[in-house]
Amino acid sequence: MTEIFSFPAVASANARVLILGSMPGIRSLEQQRYYAHAQNSFWYIIENLFGIDSSLEYEQRLELVKKKNIAIWDVLKACRRGGSLDSAIESESIVANDFEIFLGQYQNIKCIFFNGSKAEQEFNKRVLPLISESHKELNYQRLPSTSPAHAAITRQEKLRQWMMVKDCLLHADC
Image (tube, rainbow, N blue to C red):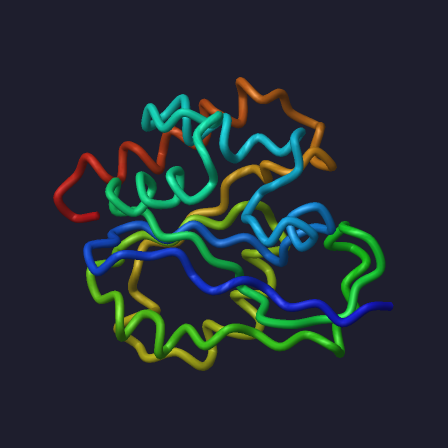
């Protein structure tokens, strides 16, 4: 098993929504880019919801995501894993990111969306018990994983469910 580390958060001071993955897959780690696997639906969904062209250079996409008041990060800071699957993560090796500091710095975040069940599970287990009560009262919602390994539902169905992110940003409370 290889020890791997997540990327720094992508966020602007105005971020109102945080999208959390679990840990980047092999392709993303190799390219040092969030959601780099060509079959991952993340950038397809972002393009369809927010008009951010998925063919733009990665840095340009990140800047446009930040302008839409969206932050991107992972629940896990480090772990040991063989391959890309969340199921291959060695539980005892997990180190979570510091959300108390992050949420203190980005106080406009009102909604946290989990990109799949592993992100939600690990957040609930390793982060939620440690954060302040005010952060526990944010809106939390799990969305279907954009990973190509989660092929149980179509890209179109994922897109339909991910519409919640756009809806959240359109409301004043988020």
